[in-house]
Every structure is written in structure tokens, then in C-alpha cells.
Length: 195
Image 1: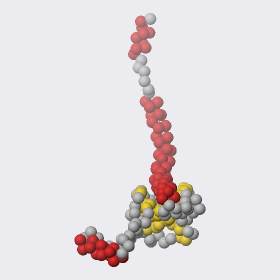
Image 2: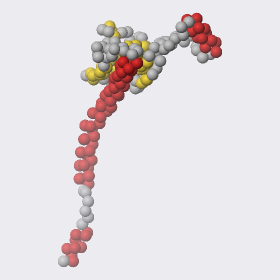
Image 3: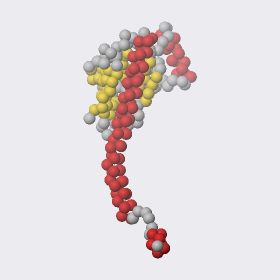
């Protein structure tokens, strides 16, 4: 009886080299299948996130326009990759005062007189930026395709809950795209992934 006990204690328990190699091969095969799918879903996640942000800005603009009984504007700044919503700025009633203030600001160095920056009179209430790698590929406003050479695009949300009809397509570097559009009657903004 004692000899059989010694034989068992001399044998070692564990995995053989072949078993370990086999498990590693299975892990590599599964990773090889899963990683390309995961990297593709990350790119789609950026598109979906940007579209979701634009949808939320549209809901905010529609809701606040109804609540305030005042039109709100959504601005897409393609150059700065910003999307923001706001109401029209209150301007001075006397045009000469406004021009004088601009001249004073230029002389003091606060405004560069040579810059050709776009000046839209919308106060930014809420804004989001487009993620890196996403670009505006197509914009349609009230059935008219807009020129992509422009940097600023504006869409109105009205106090009665309606909005301008617009459609825009965002795309990434791998040419994946998402379409964002508004229903002008309900004023709702929706999105849809494109193939």
C-alpha cells in the first residue's frame, strides 16, 4: 500500500504543453474574428454619437422654441466643426452705435479688421463639436442641395413646433455615413445609418 502512495505523489498534475498551445490557438482565432468587427463598431459609434448629439440639439431647439414662443436657430459650422443652438442676438437699435463700437474694438486690438470671419447673430445657448475624422458630406435645405464650400448652415425651429426641412450626411475617413434629417411638420430630428 505504501508503494502505490509514493507512485501517485511522484506524478505531477497540470496541463501538458500541447493543451496550452491548443488553448492559445483557439484564443488567437477568436481574437482574429472579433477585432475587425469591434474596430468597425467604434467608427460607427462615433457617427452614432455625433448624430445623437444633433438629434438632442434639435429636440432642445424645438422644445425651447415652443416654451419661449420664440424661434431658435441651429447652426452648423463646418469649418470649426461646431453645432450650436440659440436665439437671435439682441442688436443695438441704432446702427451707427454698433459700427462705432466695432471701430473702437478694432482700434483697441480686440477685433482684427482684416479677418473675414462669418458673423451670425445667434447667441450660443448649447453647443456640441463634431468628433475628429467626421465631415459634413452633403446638406439639403428645403429640397435644395447646398454648396459645401460654405462654412455655416442655419436651420430654424419655430415656436409652433415646426422646423425647416433639412437633411445632412456625415461621413468618416472610411466612408461610413449617417444621414440626419428633420420632419418639417413635427420639427423632429432623426438619424439613420447608411451602407
